[in-house]
Length: 288
Length: 261
Image 1 (cartoon, helix red, strand yellow):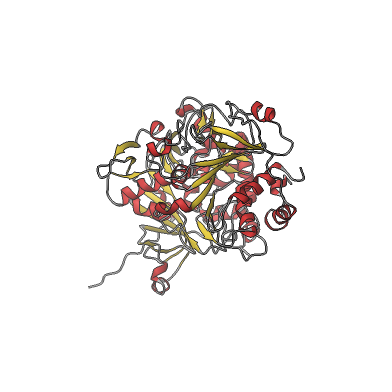
Image 2 (tube, chains in turn green, purple):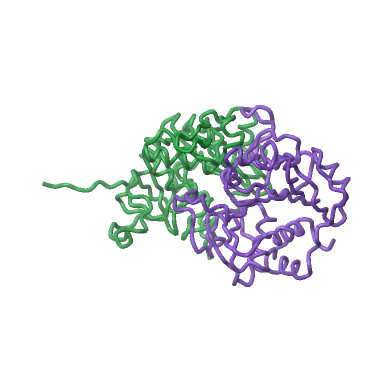
């Protein structure tokens, strides 16, 4: 009898084939930009996303987002609020499921624990339950305290970026996972991780304590996949690239279209994107 | 005055912080970032600094530069532990030992703050703010927090916030938070480039506590969108000592972020 353990390695195309319009997708920290670029390039539409900051802004600029489970959409570089997020909110075209970090993680934990909701206190007395009707004020049955019932937040898929994985989806973040990654993994129906490097199963077994995601559903090898964001142990954030994005996004005009065409729509693969960014720029992003 | 208002704000806040306290600062708040570092050097060898999901004590370092943009392992390389391995909010029961700093696009007389947006209709805001980050949970649980504003204007200090993302003293009264079942100590001061404000003991409404050197009561009232409680005599915010300013400029804010350079 010949049997073989299944490998989890996927191509970019195989990942895109799993995504359809209208899904709920969650993005970890640092943002898995390789996946985000493919989602924008393939014009996936009407997504509900769990994302923040400038990667969220790029998904909105790319026209992919209908609703955002949102706790933070700051800008940086002299802009207090992510520009595309701001425009889409002020024009009324974006539906915002207003929350905050504690409420978000509580909803994700409820999903992971297969519960309809979990209670949370942060947000009691604020406008959050008024502007997000899914958050219900309840009286707890044990002590009678007033708390927020946060419904389970159930992403169809979580997309993460990490340093390494073996071919079987044993993921090891370098110096720990991003703050939200494990919440997203536990809550999502499936988790796909882009990694800087695929390592041997022996490498993983040498330090099982370092395994942060025990069995991802898909792995894509994507060196420099978090660019223009950082990847701990590999490269730092490309600040001037992000600054140039903010500069063109501020006006929400033709320059933004040009930027999106150049970096999101034209390159058909991650390799082509890296070619467009250029080896000199990528190699300048060393940590020390 | 021999320093900028932002430097004075940082120095004022640094004196507020006691040795042994846990000090948490979020993103995009250079004044509190400088304040906790200054306090750590000047009088806080046992302080714990909580930045970007890390906990550190860096008292022994010669200088504590302000972090660069975003989360970078070079910024957090002094961390002694991370709170980010999927358990950031699992120990809020101990946050009464923690001090926090909060900004706002609107602040009302009871110290309620708004990071959500401006407008009547949440589905179509006139100005969309960045969002609440983790401030609702932090302001609910921390022992005390400070409202820190980059500018003192009647557009920011308003009679009523369009939305409340963090509860200060709610609709007022010393028992307001208790009635809501919110355990933390609430906002202590609101610190701006013009003055320091505290909250009256019974009503918990904002009161002028001290004016920064050269600032008048009239100037503060003119730039405040609600009627501020003004005591008969208002002291001047204690100016920085030479040592404070020297440490701030040479060991904390070396690039002059608070000097606007």
